[in-house]
Amino acid sequence: MSRKFTGHKLIVATHNAGKVVEIAALLEPLGIETVSASELGLPEPEETGLTFKANAELKALAAATAANLPALADDSGLAVAALDGDPGIYSARWAETDNGRDFGFAMQTVEDQLQARGATTADKRGAFFVAALTLAWPDGHTETFESHFHGTLVWPPRGDNGFGYDPVFLPEGYSQTCGEMEPEQKHAISHRAMAFAQLLPACFEA
Image (tube, rainbow, N blue to C red):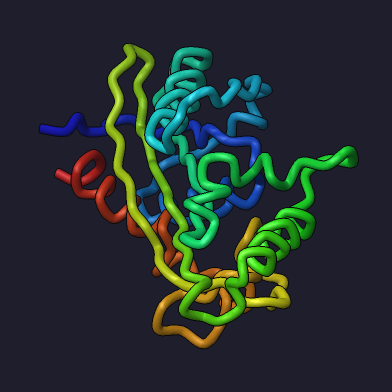
């Protein structure tokens, strides 16, 4: 039996502005007040986990214990079949440059590696986004849910919406990349939305 969230305020345990917006939008219909870890000045914990689940739990627990409030954390990334699942849990690190985080650089790196492996046709460019969502309480209890969002990678990048690898990710059954979709459409079908669809009845609804 999952533990139910009974409060009115929840930390969104991320410093990623794009994730804050997406998660806040998912929680808005519930009437829950959200505040981000960055707004509270909480430090970003080092992501030492070897799975999305482990890193989501680490981030949620760090925020919940530091602020003494329940916290919701997401750990997500892009797994590319032709790259043996990379960048995976290191998706954000692939964007690190001397001048800060640059996902244009990360997308180019993925494309360069796909080209080096001869993955030039759609059937060789399968990929999926993974999202693990953890709700943590200050006493250390956690509830975690994970979902995958399948598609193929396109090049060049298309669209200025979304964030991260969205402009090169074409979801199965769609003609627009996540970077071309309106936010409402992406929020309805994304890996984060699917994980949230598991979390909602388990932890938020009677």
